[in-house]
Each structure stands twice: as structure tokens, then as C-alpha cells.
Amino acid sequence: MATYRVINPEGDVVETRDIESAEDAHAWFVDQRADNAELGWRMEARHEDGTWHFFDDTEGAAQ
Image 1: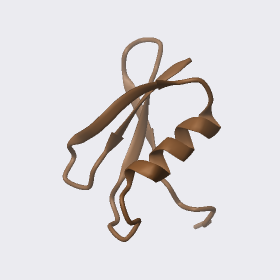
Image 2 (image 1 turned 90 degrees about the vertical axis):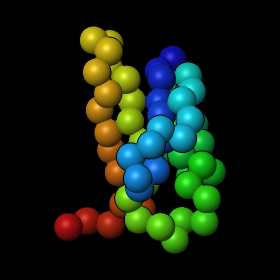
Image 3 (image 1 turned 60 degrees about the horizontal axis):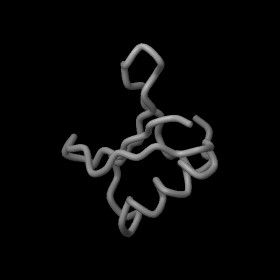
Image 4 (image 1 turned 45 degrees about the horizontal axis):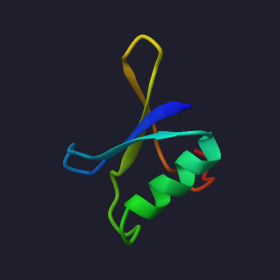
């Protein structure tokens, strides 16, 4: 189990939760982002050393 948190575009932590799998964490992230119209939402996972690492929701887009 890992700890994840959702951060809004203003940089505020919206919610933190322990979740079993990355797939479940992604589904939770999508549910927390309201209407998906606002850019800048992100999700972070807590590493074993206590630091947070983020990834963004690109919806499969490649640069």
C-alpha cells in the first residue's frame, strides 16, 4: 500500500489517502479533479524515505 495526495492548481493538498494499487490511485485522482477543465492538478506518491514525488495526468498524450 502506498500513500498518495491530490494537489490543486494553487498548490494546496486537497486530500491524502493510502491506496492499494496505482490503478486505484489513478481512479481516485480522476474523481478528485472535479470537472477536468482546470489545468495544473497533480498527484504525488510518498516515497519510503518520506519525500513526495509527483506525476501529472497527460491522459496518454506524448510530447
